Amino acid sequence: AQKITQTQPGMFVQEKEAVTLDCTYDTSDPSYGLFWYKQPSSGEMIFLIYQGSYDQQNATEGRYSLNFQKARKSANLVISASQLGDSAMYFCAMREGGRGSQGNLIFGKGTKLSVKP
Amino acid sequence: EPEVTQTPSHQVTQMGQEVILRCVPISNHLYFYWYRQILGQKVEFLVSFYNNEISEKSEIFDDQFSVERPDGSNFTLKIRSTKLEDSAMYFCASSEGQGNTIYFGEGSWLTVV
Image (cartoon, one colour):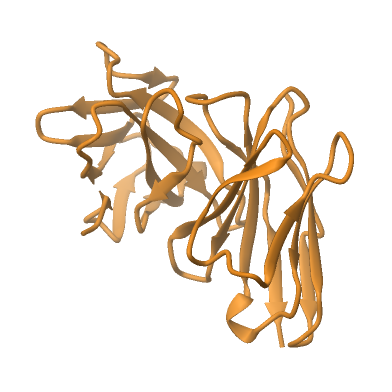
């Protein structure tokens, strides 16, 4: 079974609009972390935002916010005021386990976001 | 801002040859990782390394692969006898501690011909 599911292979958004990229996860571990990474066409993997399973508030980092719905096991990334430079692949990833976890990330298949001028 | 650096950015090698990919993790980080991304596919975990030994490895990380921290700064991935299916982007990553954010390098494209 997929541990991380990203159901949108591709998304389009108009510049300056907000966009939500979906991510659902599957784990029985009560302690876990959820990450979003951006991969531009140049290939590097850029960390965007992190949400811990015990965090009370949704994570925010500038124009990025994470809509964390624990009961639904979803961790959607919201990008506000899209810019042309946001066009990239976006990967959701999960790390299971709290103390003692070695930090192995499980990635989803990614969503390709295209921002239209 | 500190970053993970990788060399080479791109390497083409003949099947059967040995390849060493190099990484310099962020200086105060203690946990090191290698991940792989075959073109068009998702990122896959290969191995994690802590306290000078492998702490976890995936099924992909077979006897053809090895990792080493030869000095205080470098972290290397060696593929002993490359196969065509080893062609991929290889990412090095590091984190400060357990439960901390994992930062990736820019990747090394390996093409096996």
